[in-house]
Length: 198
Image 1 (cartoon, rainbow, N blue to C red):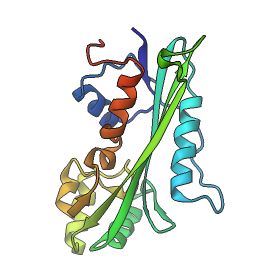
Image 2 (tube, rainbow, N blue to C red; image 1 turned 90 degrees about the horizontal axis):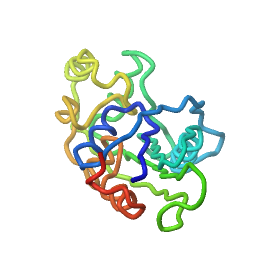
Image 3 (cartoon, one colour; image 1 turned 90 degrees about the vertical axis):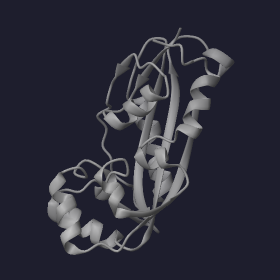
Image 4 (cartoon, rainbow, N blue to C red; image 1 turned 135 degrees about the vertical axis):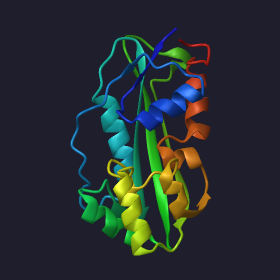
């Protein structure tokens, strides 16, 4: 049985895969610069980062899964907040408005020879639409004080206390969490990474 290596330090992605029944042989967060190029669209940026993260991890005879999640509205990106003031600014901008969450993912074979099914790279992306409730300043400050959104794009987590900020999600909720299982699970199964894996 071939191994699956998760090229991400995100505990949320690890939890999603584990709950879906997939074993993870190793966690190897890549250390690459995450800087958007001039005129690069949000989708192109996320897709490029997912590929670069996957390529930054080397392994022998293993599948490497990398992903990148971005929060965006039009051409504007809402990255991980740099501090609480930045987080408050983001949440205020998103308050009462629609925005998009895109996760690009890349599953790459690393090792000699051809992989199962003869495929060495499978990639894709999902975009979900999210609308925040109109938020008061007190609500924003109270949420920031939880610390939950400090390491998350857009400054919030849909699966935690941040759910109280959200009015509606259209599309995959696991995509908003950080990994669109509706797309990733079939890809994992197609290369022989089954749920019986340990």
